[in-house]
Each structure stands twice: as structure tokens, then as C-alpha cells.
Amino acid sequence: MKTDHPALRIAVIGAGPRSLGALEALAADLREEKRAVQIDTFDPFPANAAGPNFDPEESPLCLLNTAMRDIDIRAPEQSNCGGFADWLAHDPDPDSFPLRADLGRYLEARHSDLAAQGYPTITRVFGRADDLRPKGDGWKISLHGQWLGPYDEVLLTPGQPASAPDNQLSDWQDHAARSGAILANAYPARNLARAAEQWGDKTVAIRGMGLSVFDVLRVLTTGLGGRFENDQYIASGREPARILPFSLDGKPPFPKPETSELDALYTPPKADTEAFSKAMAQAASTTPDRARELLDAAIIPAVRHVLDQHGVTVSDKDIADWLDKEWDDPGSQSSDGPRETLQAGIELASGQRAPDIGFAFGQIWRKWQDEIRAAYNPAETPPDTAEKIVGFDEGLKRYSYGQPISSAREMEALIKAGVVDLGHAADPDIELAKSGWQLSSGERETEVSVMVDSVLPSPNLSIVTDPLICDLIDKGSLCETAKGMGARTTPDGTVIGRDGTPIPHLCLLGRMSLGSVIAVDSLHDCFGEAAKRWAKGVAERLKQKSDIEPA
Image (tube, rainbow, N blue to C red; front, side):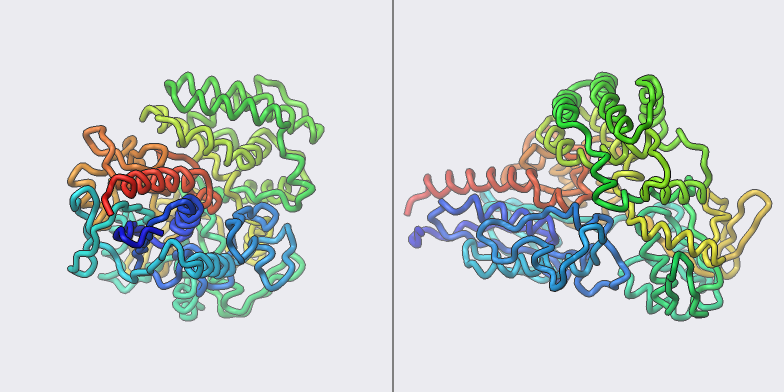
């Protein structure tokens, strides 16, 4: 190590899983670096590498939406932690869905192991970086009014930064403050659980029917002493009087196949996967219409082959028609109502019902997530094409990001028990009431005094309120890939400014670069090729700097 040179300094703003993935990748690439490297990670959140999503202190009622059999975030070769399944104190069922908190503790352990190796030197700075400014050919960072640095490289891994509420939520926040109505957030779930202790006689609405609704339902039922037995719910008497989830279409996501044997039947032939990878690489660099044609041509045979494995015969035209609707209006292929969709999902995921085109393709798309990222992320995708392909992927999350089948069965049991009511599930009219909200669907009206918001903000750069990110936007250092999407970056994460030029030594990884990259809401992406491309770029730049600077 060149002790006669000052240490090379790197700042990582954000200390969640994506930060850990980047640090592990960089440590591997710095093995040949002879100069000291100091890395400071900035984040007010207390847990290293877990972030709020995998908070080690979170309620045990919050589950991952990925089965143990599909969790493949291998520790680096030099790590002493091993894989997640090996690290757990118990031998997990491969078809089980682990606790979010358990994964958070595992990520903490991996971070501790990396830091203990001593090179690079990693220092955790507990606090929110609030400003970032150029300093020579590097950057300085403001923390509580004190400037730190300069840093040779800065990486932003903000996860989901603070964002402005949408108009509906903003109105509700004002209303709750004036009226005494209760407006609660789904997370942290442990805070929701404490508040729910007082809701035993209340009617509660849940805004949003994505994955978070299942965590909320568990908090409001089993978290208050209820239990599930033989697909029935046994109430404790402490639950809310009724729970009314709702969303724009009122339909819950589809659960993943129940067992590894069932799931294996949705694996497309290797030749289909290779053809799709080539098609996605071409699609990412062409026009929206041509991208659609290329992807459809690769998707259709894969869907046909998987359905053949299930004894289901469909024509290529049937699949093409389904895809046409999906590109233009995701989910419009089905006229099933909320409960019919829930029940169909349970039957499909358990193998009781033969798959239709949508369920089969949704599982294929889930299995292709790595290929999607590998082909799309290194490309320079035109903004309108990015909007088209990313929108397609987002729509398919109702299949590809589905919940455990146990969660779907719990919702069905709660409906049978009269605890959950889907009568207002599909886009109800909502008016402010004296002590809450009034939901109207057709001739039916229901007043609720508690509203739980389970809708997570979209990775939309224009709604971010985080001061550091807002300042970078105002200065032209960050700009949208396309309207309503994340920031424009190069394949290695280097930020591209409003004038189209890369911003030296400033990078961004994660969901706030959606559009430049795709399928970012995945734990596996945190430890994937994006982190490795960033690490390789940083290692090369640091080596150049080390070589040219005099002793």
C-alpha cells in the first residue's frame, strides 16, 4: 500500500442494501489498488445495509415477496457470512417466504464482515447529507452545516427519498390534521401495530392493494391476537370492525407458484430465453414500436412452450392479442372482479387451475428479470422507448412481484369471516366526512374514521423533496430520463446532466434512475451487474488518479 500518498476518498450517500452491494463489488475490484481507500457512508437510518425496507427491528408480520428458493444474493468470496439460507439459525423451507427483519439482520452481518476486513476502510456517518458541491475534481458534502471531504467519488443510493404527497394524499393530510380523523402509514409496521390497538370499534380503509396491503392486513388481524386455522380466521375481538382495501382497479396481485415443483413448470426453454435476451438488447436501442415488435416475437413462443408443458393449447394469435392489450392497457384482458381475481390467483398458484396466458407469461417475465436487466441496463435507451418498455415491466408486476399464496389465502379467509370487505375495492368515490372519509361505490356508501396509506411513492424525480437531490436537479446535474421517471445515467451509474454531458465522479444507482435502468425494485438488483459496473468504473478512475499523482 502506498502510504506516501493521501488516501483516496469515496462517499456513498445512502446505506441500504444497494450501498452494500456497491461496497462489496468495489472491495473486490480494489484488490490490486496499492493506495489506501477510505469510504464514508451517509445515512440517518440506524441499521447498516438493511434500510427501512428490511429493518431488523420491523414487525415479524412483514414478509418478503420472494420465496427462499429464489433468494440468490451470494456473499462475496472473501465473506465469512455465506448465503442467506446458510446464515439463518434454522433450516428454512425452500418454499417459505422469510421475514423482512431476518433478511435485514443478514445484510447487517454482511456489512459488519466487510468492514471488519479493513480494506477499504469503511466509516459509517449517521446523518442525512443535505448538500453536495464540486470541490476541485471531486466533491464536498454538507452534514448538519459542516462540510466534509473532498471526496474523489460520490455515489448516491437514496432508495426512496422523501417525496411530495400526491394531491389526494395531501388533501387527506390536511383533513386529518383539522378533523381528528386518523391517517396512518403502512410502515413502519410496528408503529401501525401500536396505533391499531385503539381501532377495535372502527371501520378502517386501506389505500392501495399492492404487496403492502398484505402486511397491513396481518398487522390489523394476527397482530391484534387473531389467528388462521385451516383456511379460517379466528377473531380475537380486538380487530377493527371492518377493513376496506381499495385501489384503482380493485384487484390484488397474483401469488407466486406455491412450490418449487409447480414453479419449475414455468421455466421457458433455454433457447427461448436466449432469443429473448437478444431481442431485449435490440429493443432497448430502437424505437418504441420496433421494440414492441421485437419483444413480442420473442415472448410468444416462450409462452406457447410453457403453456404446452401444462397441457394448455393456445394460438400465437391469442398470445399476440393478449400482449397487444398489455402494452396499451395493462390488466384490461380480464373482466374479473376483485374477489374473483383473488380466488383465481389462489387456484393458479396452487396448481388447481391450469394457467392462462397472463399467469404463464407473468411467471416467465419474473424468471427473466436478470436477462431483462442485463440487456436493457447497459444500453442507451431513447426516452420514448424507455417509457414504453419500463411501463410494460411495471404493469406486469401484478404477476412478477406477487405475494406468497399464504397471504392470498389469508385475505380470502378474512373476507369469509366478514373482517375484510371488498365492496369498495375498485376505484370508489371518496369524499371528506366530518370525522373521516366517505367511500361510495354505486348506491353503497360507507364512512371510515381510519385511513391507512399503503401506496409507495413512484420513482419519479419530479416529486422528490430531499434537499440534496432537489439542489442537484435545480443545478441541472440531475434530469429525468423521461417525464415521470428517474434520473438519466450512463451504464456505470454516472449521472448525466441537463445539457447531456456526464457529471464527473458523481454516480447514482437504484430506483431513482428508473428509465436509465429497469426492474430496480428487486433485492437481487442491489447485488447485480449495475453495482459491478459502477465498481469497475470507480476502480479504474482511482487507479488513473493514483498513477498520475506524485508521491
